[in-house]
Length: 138
Image (cartoon, rainbow, N blue to C red; front, side, top):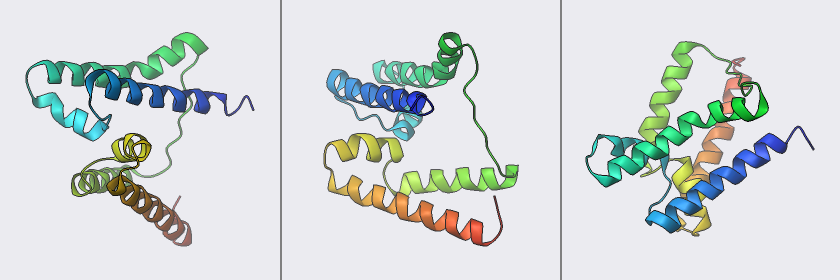
């Protein structure tokens, strides 16, 4: 069980932050929209910057409390990662939101659009991993 504890706590913190943003600011915690909103001016841009700073500082706080950096392994070439990032960005714009907005906030609100989006994310992810493994890619 202790191996799953950091993931469980991380998920709880993500849910808590999404709930707090919705309850306190009336805004959905969609990271793609928050990051895109960084170029605006005014109080919304300040709130967006504070939210993104919290995301960036998360691993730093983890190291402070746990004493080591979180373990993260990424297998794949830089070209593959760049292509994946571009496709995720394209899908985020096409789907009017990202996994955090649809998967966390949207599902919690039983949004039909978010249910369809998350189902699409899952099916596409499963198909991609299956094709990559079939093709011998990591």
